Structures are given as structure tokens and as C-alpha cells.
Length: 163
Image (cartoon, rainbow, N blue to C red; front, top):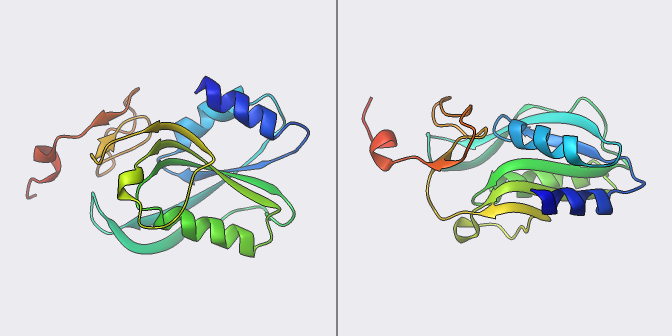
């Protein structure tokens, strides 16, 4: 995360970026990142969903909570917990560009490039992860495990159970 901090501070020096946290999974990562950036930032939040069932993306992106401030003419940094298929972030980046953001960059804690269906490349990546279902540090399964202080792989026996 030190490397991300230095890159963000350098890239946004003298700018006042709008940092958009994609709720809920990115909240812990975003809080840690913005406290380490050595420049002024403004924060806002979006709640965007693309998960139809507990572990697989549905393919459709739904905005549950939109921004409170305008992105027009702003340098925007989207902070995400994990990039999987890329559908959510492709949709979100396109929306922000349509709303006339000056620039849109993406910072993600975790990246699963092997699962990518859309051509999207994050500008800042914490870690690349294998095609496993991960939880912790903000990521959840059915609302649980977000508070774990680490990221771990959830065993398939947990999410393959019939309730």
C-alpha cells in the first residue's frame, strides 16, 4: 500500500481530486488510502451492485446510492475493493465520463485479471489475486466477514451449502 500512497500523492499533487468509494466493500481500503495521501481530497460514496447471487456477478449494474456532489470538471479517483469481470467499473467509469469528469482513474485493493470480461485496467492495484472467492477487509459473503483485518479465501464448502 506504500507504493499506492506514493503514486497517488505524486499523481494528484496540486489537484483536489474527488475520491469516490464504491460501497460497501471498499470502505476500509478507502479509509486507509485517503489517510495516507499527502494532498487535499474530497470524499463521496456510491453504492453499486452487480451481484445476482452471493458469489457471481449478475451482469447488470444497478446504482443504489448515487453521488452527492457533481463530478463535472473534477479529477475523479474511484476506489474499489476488487475488480472481477470489470463490468461494474466499466459502467461506473463511463457514467462519470458522461457526467463530464475531467479525469477518471481507478484504484483497487484486489484485481482478478483472469476473470476480466471488459477491457478495463486499474491505474493503481494493491494485489492481484487468483480466481477464488475472497472475504475480509471490507469484502463480505452474505454480510459477514467484512470486519476481518485481513483478506482470506472463503472455502467453497461455506458458500455451496444449501440454506
